[in-house]
Image (cartoon, rainbow, N blue to C red; front, side, top):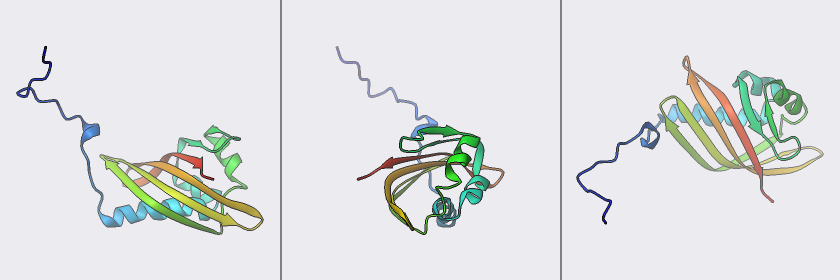
Length: 137
């Protein structure tokens, strides 16, 4: 029995349609992401949605809301970051940044991770909805 019928077209759902952002919008997102690492918790909070979810290496694990800021208070403000293997996926009002990071600051071991951040364009302003870090050794 042959289940394929070449005359029947599979519908293209919105999630399967690709989009692109103009280079200046892409740069805005990458700048926001780098500042997330280097500019401290107040800056990170200003660019993050209220009920965002962040996943950090255990501990602390999965954090949401104010728990994020309690964790990040002492864990942001890296002296330098190197972001490589950058990828940006965009559809509608959602952009996903994926990358490899190496971050350093005094008296702390260099942090290396694979990361993903999801942003929503809301009222012409990008807001981080989620962020995940997976450690790389």
